[in-house]
Image (tube, rainbow over all chains, first blue to last red; front, side):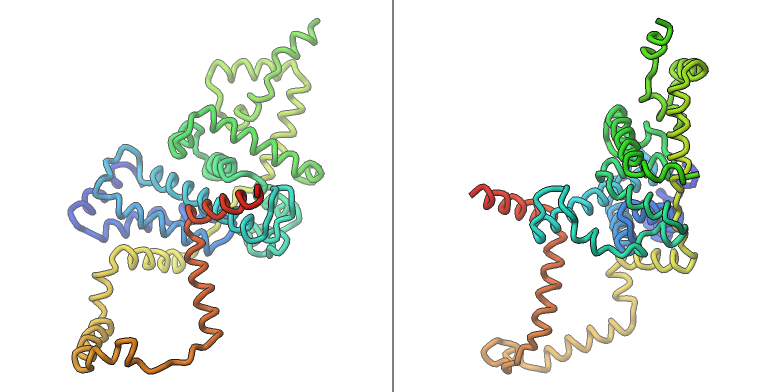
Amino acid sequence: MDAATEKRILDRIKDGDESGFEALVNAHSSKIIGLAWRMVGNREDAEDIAQEAFIRLHRSLASFRGDSSVSTWLYRTVTRLTIDHHRRQKLKRKIFFFRHADSEHDPYELAADPAASPGDQYLAGEAVDRLSRAVEKLSAQQRAVFNLRHHEELPLKEIAAVLKLEEGTVKSHLHRAVHILRKELKDLQGGLT
Amino acid sequence: MNDQRQALSCRPQQLLLYYYAELGAEDLCQVEQHLQSCSVCCAELGELQKLLDAVPVITPELSSVELGRFSARVMEQVQPQRRWLSRPAWGLALAGGVALLITLNLNVLLPESAPVQTKDPMMTADQDVLLNLELLQDLKLLEDLELIQELEQLG
């Protein structure tokens, strides 16, 4: 959606035309669900997060000044929501399974159904499974930066704006993320062609 | 000596930015020049390309029906009152409920006169689970629980 169309829709919404908001949801939902899905690894949570992002957007529309585009706003919100989601999941496991160190086996991961990851639904093969699992080893911020750069193809400058981080910090997260992926997939690299 | 100078100019951190086309004009020129003469960095870039090219750009595709359903769900959430009142069934149910409350004496609903109900233990357990799940969405609460757990461990 170009900037002029978006501005027209935002003006319509401010004039009380709710169909304008529906147009925004329709325009962005596919990308936003996709981003959340890659970040959390399952469709149900991804849809819940995307829904929450749109609800927050609706609440913020009255004060939406258009400093950033709607898509940047949504990317930022979804990324924050997924980071919170990961933090929440990690705390639940720590509290209820008494995991004291990240090196200990995670009961959720041990019990995880590999068929639940989005990659499995679209691509087959051991390498893809390994890649999906390797991405899960990244911290929430590393995963966010890697997803936004590699999958969404956002420039690092824009990622810095989305995540409200310094560009240097974004670069560090990206370097770290790729370093971890290389380490995790070392034995597979010969077959990754 | 030559090798030493070459090694000094190796900047492996730049290779990732080169791969993602994130270098400014000056850095890009330097890296390209360096790659022409450094086999180590060329090999490193090759490894990086092999890995990153193999990471699939997964775009989960949702059908138009699924996206329509999602959109309807969002719109239902953002316009609860309008949707709620616009449904005749809900309007009738609301009117019926109000009429029932007026017709029945409110005392019937007071605890002392309420009939004793036997609690279904399964239902109670389910309710507890639901309550717990709802509570567990509160990140602040989880952080507090973690802190308590850590303090307990410290004795």
